[in-house]
Image 1 (cartoon, rainbow, N blue to C red):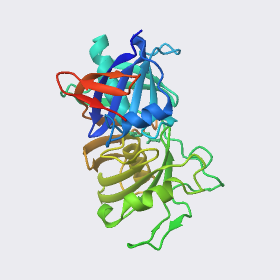
Image 2 (cartoon, rainbow, N blue to C red; image 1 turned 180 degrees about the vertical axis):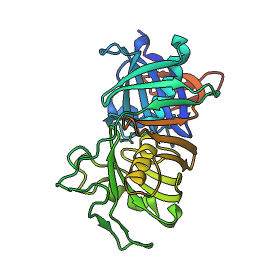
Image 3 (cartoon, protein in one colour; image 1 turned 120 degrees about the vertical axis):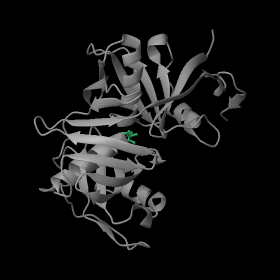
Length: 297
Ligand SMILES: N[C@H](CCC[C@H](N)C(=O)O)C(=O)O
C-alpha cells in the first residue's frame, strides 16, 4: 500500500502553505510530521499546513489549519483566500463557502486575476472572546507592558479575535523592534491563555498602515491575513483610521474593509500557486514535480 500522497504549495503575499486534499484520501499527519515538513532547514518549509476536507456543514469544503509547530488552529486569512481560489476554479462558481473551526467563510472572485476577497465575519472584541486571562472592560488598549527593551517601550496593545487571538502594538517604526526576540515573550505572555499573534502597526494615514507580525505557532511571516484584519479593526476602533484600510506587510498589501452595515471584515489580496509534488509519508521525503528529490530528516 503506497504511503505517498500529493501536495500543492501556495501562498498569500508570501505567507506560505502546504495544501493537502483529504477528499482524495490524504492521511491526517501527526504534529511531529507536520513540524518536520514545515522546517525551512530540513523540510519543504511552510507557515501552515492546510487540509481540504469534505464539509459536514455542507459548505464547498472544510479547511483544517495546522501551524508550523504542529498545533491546529481555527483561522488563517491568507490560506482562506488560497483555498477560495482553488474551490472557485474547481466549481466554476464566482463565490464559494469554506467551513472552518471559526465558522463559515465566503470567498469570491474580484475579477482581477488571482485576487480573491474573503468575508472573515465579525471580529470578536470582548476580553473573554480574545481570550484574555483576566477581565478588561476596554479591549482597545489593555494594560500590558514589556520592556525595557532596546527600543521605546511597547505598551497598551489593542486585542482582537478574528477566529484567532491578536495583540496589536502601535509604533512609529515597525523595524525599530527586534520582533524575533520579543515576539515569543509576548506570544506566550500569561495574559494570553491561548497564546496570541503579535503585531507591530505603524499607522501611515487615515486609510493605511504598515504591519509586521510574529505569528503564534510559526514566528515571523511575510504576511498574516487575520493579523491585517485585526489591525485594521483595532485602528478603526481607536480612531487611528477609517474602516477601510490598506495594510502593507513585508509580502505585499491587503485591502481590509470593516463593513459598517454588518460589521463583517472583508479582506482582499492576491494568491499564488508555487508548485505541486508528492510526499512519501514512510520516509517524510518529497519530490517536487519536475525537480530533484528532497528529503525531510
Ligand atoms: N498563526 C495563526 C494562524 C495563521 C494566521 C495567518 N497565517 C493568517 O493569514 O491569518 C494562529 O495561530 O492563530
